Image 1 (cartoon, rainbow, N blue to C red):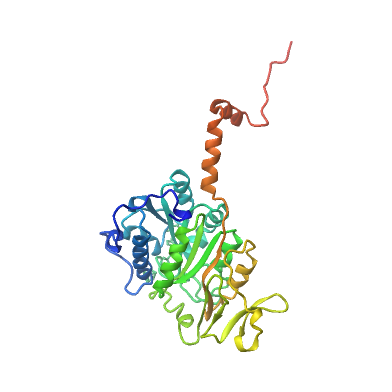
Image 2: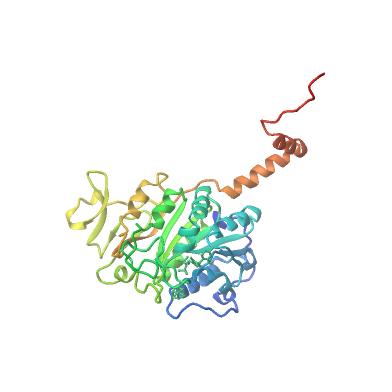
Length: 347
Ligand SMILES: Cc1ncc(C[n+]2csc(CCOP(=O)(O)OP(=O)(O)O)c2C)c(N)n1
Ligand code: SF4
């Protein structure tokens, strides 16, 4: 059993995608990118082979947050933006569960921004799937924190004035120990990244580029088309893309940038190392994502490092306190360091 899932029991029977398919009618619009993620997740979970009753999926509010209904495991369609906090409680109290969070760009980064950030910072052992369609889908097409500058929507009729978040950069800045990006149209890549995220012990954030054909169709079309560039990050490999024509280099000024492979000294090509403790290179790679109409974006695992998890630390602390004299410990906590006794003034 891999480290992230240590303590979670394996199924005695082999599982199939069907075992992970619930009897609920899927209520997403035809062509929604969420279908591909759901199907990939159901197959991936069967391959992972852990007990279904030891899996829990906690979501916030949004189209993507309907996910737990459709997977035959435990689940909770919770409160807008609060799924990471609820998942934190579950992960602390039940180390035998494999805990997933499903959220959208609105749910995670608007109302839930604070909750997401602190779950990442604390390194709670949960796997977060952030469905990024760059719009509010459920509420019918308002701009979101990942919508591009100038985006015209129902709530920004003259164009958005907000600089969008780059969720990968945000997660790296929040000290996340596992940060990755994948895309709904590449099921093999999705499955690979989600498996690695589940196997990581600590908070994993996976941004999933997800098409919403109804309110933000083709948000990723340029990226996938002939003029678009998906930069695939593979640990231990030089970052080369576009059929070898382009690469990522660290230039003489120390900057990470894209260059034509024919023009560079091969020793300047960056060899991807997702295990670097210092997140600055992963952050520089995340900045290769174009913020406007997406024409270029790295996908893959940006960062995978080890750090003690919050839930393990909490359980250890509780055990240590309980090992001492519990009553005395409780009294001293209640008394604190700034209590005093009041006596009647002597006559
Ligand atoms: C407290 C609260 N505020 C606002 C809403 C309205 N609301 C529901 S879903 C949503 C945003 C959904 O967008 P996103 O997270 O991107 O999910 P998507 O529907 O695109 O999958 C909002 C603002 C709500 N349900 N509850
Ligand atoms: S509104 Fe968009 S995100 Fe929501 S189900 Fe329909 S296509 Fe999917």
